[in-house]
Image (cartoon, rainbow, N blue to C red; front, top):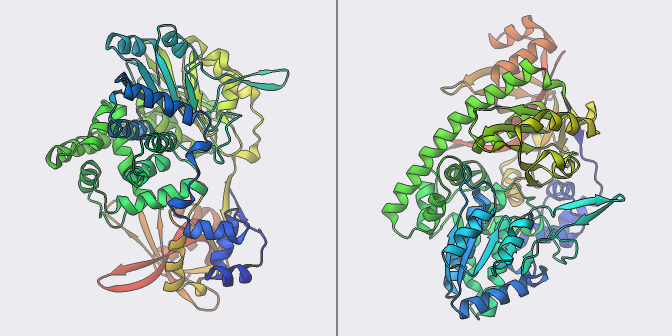
Length: 590
């Protein structure tokens, strides 16, 4: 089920449009994205690298950079330990390249997802000691490594933590008591006493800021930081950060560079995915390039992805990129099979009625648990944990919905886990197998979610009649890019459209083309990508099989459609036409 809502935020749109030299519709779209002042909208439209926040506002960043500067001067051995996802690989890349530029004796380690698990463990610290490592810098992990860092400190090691995950805490007398690891410096914008203006940045942005300060301490030209922008942008999109404020600027500037990147590894990855270098968007970061980087850490070793980004040889880069593409194809097939098993599990166990879905897939590869959780979440619009069996117990990943802070809910049942961590919308965990039912019962018992929370919310920007659409207006919408989490592609709506002519396109039959007409006779081409059989099933449920059959056969019928849509320009053999892409639909009989 869906509930459609039209945004009703108020402002003097004509005045804003005049001052910003945009259309009133664009001014309204920006207001719908919680921008209230002309200054905020100006920064949204024209923000540049000059508008990024001062890295020195991060708590401990100057202290941490100072420690590392001294270690570099003293020629002490430094090791970077990251996570194995896109953000972890990107953070590691930025720190490694930046430290090398500053003259450091540095290497890197990316934990193996299966053998080592997430983040630092005592085994990795012991290996570092055996290798003569003096200092460990973490990236995209470390904030929850309390015992591990204490273990290393007791053996004389230095630790600088750079992370962005939620700070561990315990609740006492209704108040949160945050627990910070005893590292030499802890750089994480989510610390309660950190003055950084934006806490929701990814690990790669924290690493970017750290290197920015280190470059300043070594008097390196700050313009050299630009070489990290496309990698930082990719991490921001793939870690599903809000594309607002500073994040939006980083992704916007990173995409400019990505479209003409000098990085041989990225160029090779773009080429093997058959993408055009000058038309890349945030979508390609999040759903094409990023998954290839992720696939290495899921099915092989994330070192392959990092080595690709560091590679300077075009031939070798091409070979590595092809390997990542192959791994990603394998990952897709495994995910599809796992998703089918998850649906079957929920049906056969009866757990689909739970408020929080716990899916146990013992034979599923642990690396794809999070992807499957995301797919199941999308299907049922409920928080989902997918757990799989490993040699050390159960491991799993969770994906949440609006209104359910997954990490905080896990804190309330922390006795079920060996390790856990995450964000409001996603989490990871490990636990003993005999705790599975206890976890399911407790996480559901604690849930305050209601049936209303499970109804999918469709947020419409403007009820915009299709005669308003023009090439000029559609080009103006490009000012709102990059689109993503927190800066969604505008969604418009039109009621009472007659459907003339329907045709299924594509080899897989996943595209439906229609010709729509409003009550005044204005027509527009429309396409719908999705489950076409379900589209017609819902039409039958609403309008009857007879009317649906008449429409499909090209005969007169009494069906009308309300829809949400996004407009675009379709170019075919040199001819340009306006078409709308249908996102949501409702049918009625005249």
